[in-house]
Length: 439
Image (cartoon, rainbow, N blue to C red; front, side):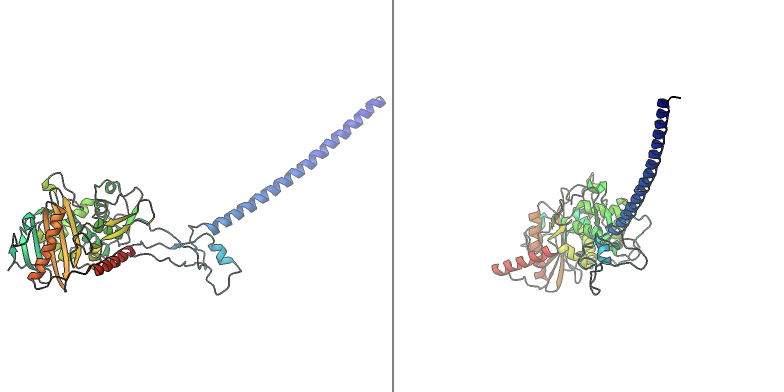
């Protein structure tokens, strides 16, 4: 072998050894880098998991020995009760911070994120127990029948009655036992029965039970509170809407839900409750009072029956409070669908035909029923109830019931209240407006 060939061979061997040494070092470096990367990833995953456990605003504290009761925020009477308080962002930091004084509540000042109650599941097993009531016996002795001398408007009524609720004496009557379409006077029964079910100890419902809006309720004709898909309301809120706004969609939703998912079941119970009260000339086909396809399918009742119903209704103080409201808020203020509900009862003090002592109960109107009203009134500790149906206009109805109540109180020896001065009226109006806004 020549000298030159020997040198080439030696250089080739050296190069091969160099390449092998480089590959060896490169492999060790890659393995070390891979190990470091894996370790870093594991640390990041662990850190991320710890952060998630500590900062999730919807996770309640359930670790043994570390359960914390967050202070509940104040709410109005119509607010639904909340489930267990939820942890807010920053709660963990507040709990573990070593800078907080030992005598200071680490949760003070934090905004409580409250879990919204789940909607009630319609019950298919709850059956309301019958309530035996001795039907009220009305005393017609001395009652004025049909028209009243010197009193305009009685001739416009299809049927009506005026009774002294303290002794059940009838002061005036016109076709008192005649079944007539009663429109939204239907809701007196709907509201009362819903309230009775919610207050029943054996019932799965309470006033704070949440009811999800249904397609049927959304499609119910006006008047309404314009339900949106996905909304949920408490029974209490729906009672306000049905009472103050006379909302047909709210009345239907109550019936549909409390009937176990079918309004028909609730309507059957409405008719059973009517019989328990002694309403012998009453038939309900729906929970809101909208007209049926024919007059025969309209909700029917008589002034006597409506009076018997109101005598039971007035025993529920809360329902009478709702009936006396001239206005009430519905939904959260500031929300896109917020509305201020207005009462159609124009005889409430401060309304169009303000009538001293009127504190409820319900108005109604359809083309076949005409304009109807059941008005309760208290003056000097005496209580009258007027039921009037079939008027051609709201003004005719309101003006007649206004003078009818004055006439009735004169008949039982209670003098008409003196008209307030303009200054006192203004002060009284301002006070009522303030009170209403605060409710």
